[in-house]
Length: 251
Image 1: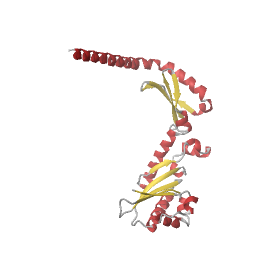
Image 2: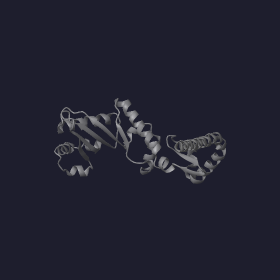
Image 3: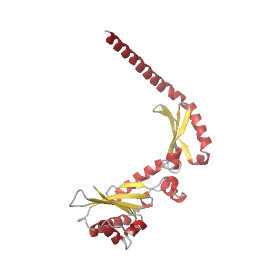
Image 4: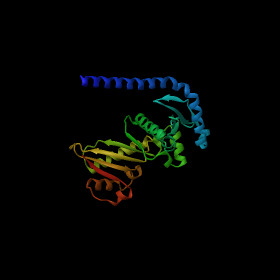
């Protein structure tokens, strides 16, 4: 009997807690939109005070209440895919300016997707694309190109990773496959900073080779055959160090 009473009390307490919590959430949801004008004023003041240097080049969207906090999206006038958020929660204001705007997380992600789409239109294939640096690590000229370009696949800022099919797992076939692939990309004005290739042995599924940090200039170099030969022999080669080429056997 005592156990039943104890359980009943616990269930009652749990009901009260859940009722109160949901009540607070519902009241919050009802009241919060009414506070938007005041919060907008606070966020606008914060923006003008902290980011005067970019004030003429940004626009702020309307403040909205989302996921139990207020937020405003601030976008570049040059490209609205370069943006950051300002949050207001519990009387505190925070933002994603450094990560999203300075380092360019938002525009980098967008341009990686753009490169993928543009390459698919030109080749019919999808490749893994990785822009190699954050926006703040590039010169002003390249920054502007990244922000404004409609054809970022022409800018040498990214790594393109592809899996190649070879007739035989030999130096000759691997050399030919890489050369033909890179020439085809270049002819379509697809110009990554470097390539990563994964080549599967057609006769042995547990044997595959990954070659990283290959530039088109190296691929067209007279030494490239020697580089591939030495990789296949797992032989140390000073050319690998010179061109900072990495390789590993997978599986």
